[in-house]
Image 1 (tube, rainbow, N blue to C red):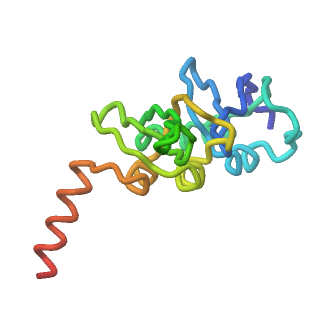
Image 2 (image 1 turned 180 degrees about the vertical axis):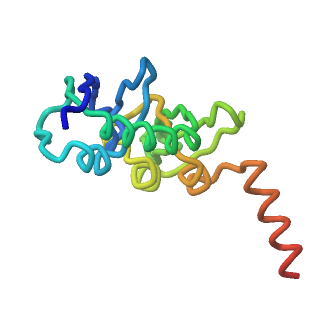
Length: 156
């Protein structure tokens, strides 16, 4: 049972819990638990490199990549400091912009880091999040709002 082997390029990314994997020339994001399920003998201390994958492993990675690819949205974030009347910093918020929605929100750092998995020292950047994370951050999406409205009408 000699299966065809292929090389998969992977890299642990700044967003905790995900690997960036190049499959057929396309970059995909794979949750680390699923990545290790596909490659159980992988040294978890290795943050980037290549790994040989058989056809079954490639199929599994492709399936996960398809699922993750359908539900990812890009956000940009930056830290904004608030000052009191004496010029001392008194408040910190993340200003988060959902690029495809054209919306910007302010959120406290603890909530932003809990929802997105961003590092505590991250002050500005860009990352991909899921639709559920967008909803939890507080963005309003048309498809979710219309579903909620129809559910409210049905339950009334």
